[in-house]
Image (tube, rainbow, N blue to C red; front, side, top):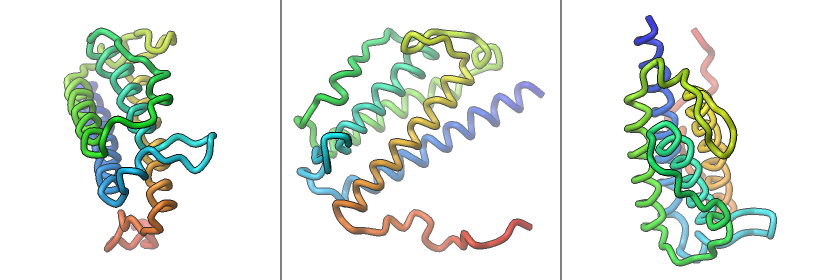
Length: 169
């Protein structure tokens, strides 16, 4: 039973993370290079900063804490960087990070999910780290979608062809 539950949990986390990566991947071609590092005001991050931040967070919590790779994150740079990477380079960096992270998640066993580790100075179980990353990734994906809609006045059509008003059976 624990094996089936572990697999269902890790598979669903990977599915959600990959869905959000696809949404970010759909946003970037709609943006011009100048839009990627543009922020509507001083209290909002640019799409570029959000992608760097997602890469840092995923790497620290999953690849490092769960995967055992050295933590090399420099969080302040995720927000202070104001350019230097194209949208293709940002997407490649994000996709590589997600590929590494989902490989770590896919290998998790029940004991790995229950084991406590330190990430960002806080003690987390493997379950907590995966839930944190999945939720955090989704939150910032929404911000990237919002910025894309704001800058380009487009409907992203993520649910085109699906009747979201259909009642549960």
